[in-house]
Image (cartoon, rainbow, N blue to C red):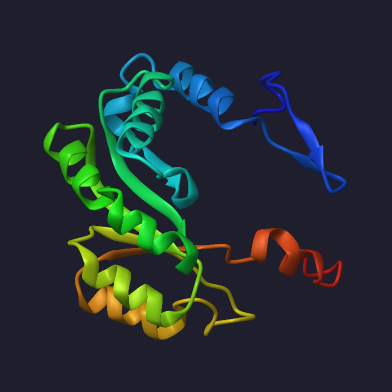
Length: 181
């Protein structure tokens, strides 16, 4: 637990929030020492809004490799793609960046998450050969974003699918009766 480790933290909207990403990555470097890396899958994400240039994407990825002290990330995700990001991602060589990072041995698998409509999800699926997708999926809104149909489509295309936000960032859990919590 990062609180027990004495890492800096903050409060967000009255809730205890975790440390910043760079602090977590440095803490991860300590945890992966002594051979633990070979038994661990590392996942990192670059927010779609930060993938504005090839140089920026490379700097971001190199930092994500350096801080935890690793040469390769097992899974790398372009995170939170929205319609407003989509044209920029296509124009800015994002697919080429991912493929070059894979060929250089910096990432093993490229994936995405989309925070928009089922139509955009299908466009992103068709854009390149992805290994996986992260998809917001919870009991309240199975049709939210790509929804049940998008998850089924990704699986049919051979992608690994990981559900994110199963409790909507804790909001669904907060609404439960005390006995259920």
